[in-house]
Amino acid sequence: MLTDPSRRSFLQASLGLAAAASLAAPSLMARPLRTNVRILILGAGAGGLSIASRLARQLEGASISLVGARQNHYYQPGYTMIASGLWRPGKVVSQTQDWLPRGVDWINQDALSLDPDAQQVGLANGQLLSYDLLIVATGCQLNYQDLEGMSPELIGQHGIGSVYASPEAAAITSQMIDDYRDQGGRAIFTLTHTPLKCAGAPIKMTFTTLSRLEATGQRQRYQVDFFSPNDNRVFGVPFYNDFVLQRFAEQQVGMFHQHRLTGIDAPSKTAYFRTSDGSTSSQSYDFIHVVPPMSAPDLIRQSPLAWQQGGMAGQWLEVDQYSLQHLRYPNVFGIGDVNGIPFGKTAASVKLQVPTVEQNILAYLQQQELPAKYNGYTSCPLITGIGKAMLAEFGYGAELLPSFSFIDPKEESWAVWIMKEKMLQPAYYAMLRGHI
Image (cartoon, rainbow, N blue to C red):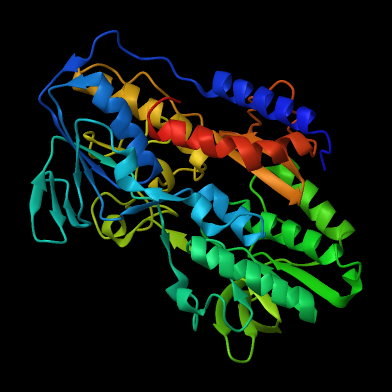
């Protein structure tokens, strides 16, 4: 796509400098705040590591513990690149211990119970931990089991792919797409009915698969259909929703609206959908991309910290969408996918949620009014084909929130593709260190 190596290098350097300028966050306090507060951070992923790094610098004398048993750290925004046949799985894998900030205690156990009234967390080994302040950054849970006949173990069998489960599952999904490309037939791409992390991933997978099919010069051999549980909606921001629907029509993608995936008969390659009138529609396929229903982990869903009322009741962490402070337990804050808020389930969302929580925690510890407000910022490099993408940045109310003056958020661009391919992973790792 870019044949001039010097131009490519210049572009990468320019994007890197612009990204650094846009994402850099200044130090909040000239001197650390002295306190003996006990802080527990649940989850050693992007949100947990990022807030631990920042608080370790801002607090002197505090006890900060990070709770989570996962040894590997995964750069999840790279999963779509793996499933599109462009990256190897190892490119997104590092070790959790490599990102631990100095002065933070890593408790290599998973939490099994929560008692916010007693301010205690129960671990898998039976230990009880007490805290003064709790930060929930557990990410979300993939509920493949809610689809009858489906499990993560089926990914890579019977034409089933799914980008979400793991780097290995993403790689197997790419192989399933290659197999489908070789044999032809019908491909089905799905969208779940629940809030989901990286809401653009199902669309990205459709577009990159189309690129692979069109490259054969025999697009007529393939029937590609997209099934959405919603009415004429595949994305939460109207402009991008309309763009995707129009582009799907141009690329001859069949649209099935108000079709919610409920189950799969893997051996017969049949998917079952619930339609708007409550009936069941059975659809045969040669390849299917499954997007599982998602929720907060059961640890949160089954605790008093979950929403008690409304559409998110029993499913997501109850926090104020602006301060990210729990609405009933003021010494609890949430970061990342676990939060029950309108937007904010991307790694880029963590980038702004972490300094929001940091500022509000510092104010809370000093018994001050919480000053910081999260605006719902969500960023999605919306891949529209291999080699091109749009930088969708938006917040609450679906307001567009562009970061870069030289990138039109409503236009496809090879520059955004280069940003996705080359620049975002280093920026993500800088975030883990608390630098942006």
